[in-house]
Amino acid sequence: MAFEELKNDLMGLKTEVGSYIEHSDEYYRLKIFKVLSKNITGLLKFILIGVSSLFALLFVSFAACLWLSEVLNSYFSGFILVAGFYILIAILLYLFREQLNRPVLKKLSKYYFD
Image (cartoon, rainbow, N blue to C red; front, side, top):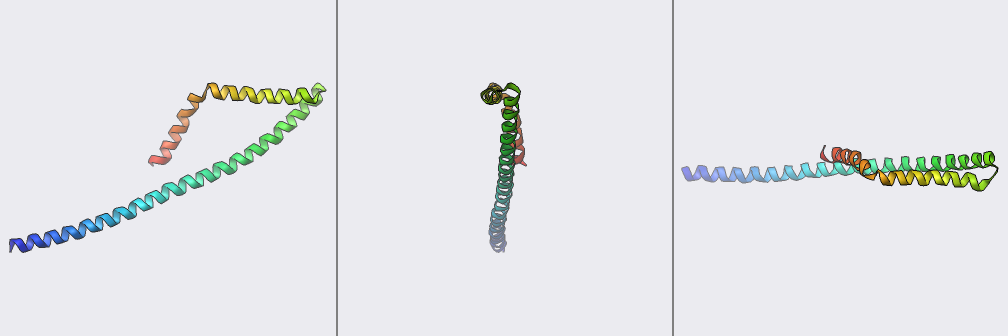
């Protein structure tokens, strides 16, 4: 009698473990899908906004070059001044690159661990 109950308990345990493994597999698949879809849509939005911003920056820069060229009566000077401005921005970004890492890491960890 005790062996029969033990056998039934073990059979039930086997069924429950199989069910647990199956549901865990489904959970992790859904979790992976959620993370991947969030990252892919975020990347797509980043690319679209980035490309649009770059085109806007290109045209604004070109307009600034032409305006400075008219003010200084020299095309060369207008374009050099705008190029110098971008070089200055690049140098500042390089110097402060460590401070830029913190917000990026915080944002990525928020997406990854939520």
